[in-house]
Image (spheres, rainbow, N blue to C red):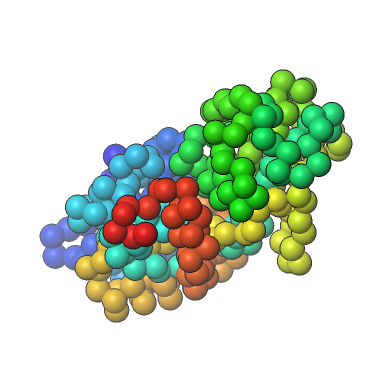
Length: 282
């Protein structure tokens, strides 16, 4: 856990403990989000202590009261708002918008015309807690009578999504699960060629830039501890939404801005379907 020294509060000042998930390491997350924390200090008139945590303990820290507000992924937001009664504060707006989805990529020679054809195939995914690399596709396949990964002929777990796309393109695997935008970005960077992989059950949504297999779900969210004062939740939401697109703080965070919180019911349904919500939330 890392805290910026210049964000440490004095005893006489109000303090917001802002946690941020750090998928690529705490130091990277601190550099990425500290300008946003500084902007929030000015807008709120309060000290903001920025705390970067990995996915394994950020919800525990929220639950035990060590954090007031969290910037995290939609799975964390859904788990927090259902199991911990956390309060939704805002949605993160990324370059692709406020939503993303799951993509099933397949090798063109694998004989996969629809997602139902994944039965008996060699499939590579991310770990089973990854929203765009496992959960969304698994929920989608359940609706087609396919249980992921039990119905696959062979299943392997990758450490990153680029490996999945590359191995499917080379024919080492018949299909793989990645989040929206991964294929387009790899084509744009010249890492694969158009046609090296196909998107199974391809869908297009107006206003969303990337093809997808599953429905679209909310992007990253900002959510608060259940005991964080509702007036403070409103003030935090207003402050986040005031951050204008193109400001240095948002550029550093690699986001477009913040907006009113998205409805999480779709991802809650997906988590229920794959058995990731506590029994009390089912």
